Image (cartoon, rainbow, N blue to C red; front, side, top):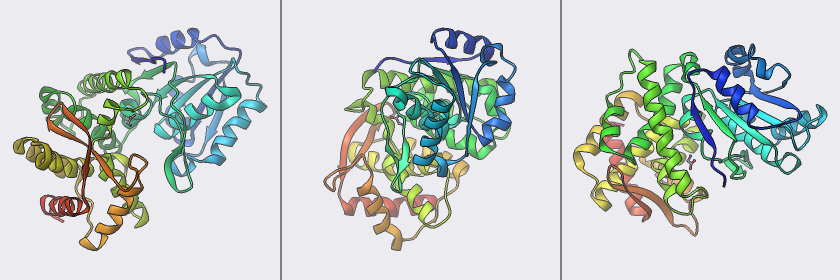
Length: 353
Ligand code: GLY
C-alpha cells in the first residue's frame, strides 16, 4: 500500500491547493454530509482551488454508511462526468471518509482521493491508514478495501465546532495511541483539561497521535501483525457498542472503546503483567470523563456472543491486543469464556455499576 501524506495544517487553503496540484485531474468532486455541508463547507467554500468542484451531499451519521449511499455517490460521480482521472475530496467525519474512500477506490476501478477529516475521531483514526468501507448486513465496516488517500489534511480549527462528547469520543483513540506508545505521552493525555479546552495544546497532541498511527500502519498496512496494536480496547469495545445499539441506547464509538480499554487493560494486568498503578490511573480517567455503560450479568452471554462474531476473531477464539507495559504490545492473546466473564465482573466492580 502506498504511503499517504498526512499534513497538520496551519493554512488549509495553501495545503489543499498544494495537495490538489499534486493530483492532476480532469474533474474535482467534494463529498460531504448534511452536517459538514452546513458547518465545514463554509470554511473552505471561498478557496480558489475548489471553485470548479462538483458537490455531492449525503445523509449524516452511521445509518447512511450503506450500499444505497455508496450507489448514490457512484451515480453522482458518473452522472456528473467523472472519469478515472477525476479527484474526490472527502470532507467530514469517519463515515464520510470511510464511505468516500471506498467510493473513490472502486469507481472506474479507482480514482484518487483526499481526506479532510472534520471530527477528532476521523483525524486521529478513520481518515488515516487507508481502511475504507461501508456497513452491510447489520455489520459495521463489513465490506471495504485497504486504499490510502493521496493526502490527509488535518486542520484542528474544525474541532471548535465539535461538542465535548464528540471530542471525548475521538480522544479515546488518542488515549489508545498513548497506551501503545510511551509513558510520557500517555501521562500528558491523562492531564488534558476538558473544562477549558486549549486547542493549541490539543493540536500538538493530535499531531503526536497521528504520527503513532502512521508509524504502525507503515510497518504493517494490511494488519497482519503489529497493526493489531490499534485494536486495543476494540474487542470488548465493539461488543459494548453493539449491546448499546441493540438496547436502543447507542453510544459514540470512542466511549465504547474507552470502556473496552478498561476491560482489556485488566486482562493485560492479569495475563501479561501491565502495572497496577497505570491500570488504576487509566480507569480513573475513563470513569471521570466517559462515565459508565451499565449492564448486568444477564447480558454477559450476549456480550460474549458479540465478541465471537467480531471480524477480528475466527473459529470461536477471541483475540485481544494486550500490553505488558505502556508501549510493550502483545498481539494475538486469547481468553477463555470464564476469563471473559471474570473481566466483565471486574468492569462492573471498578466502574461501579
Ligand atoms: N482503526 C484501526 C486501524 O486503522 O487499524
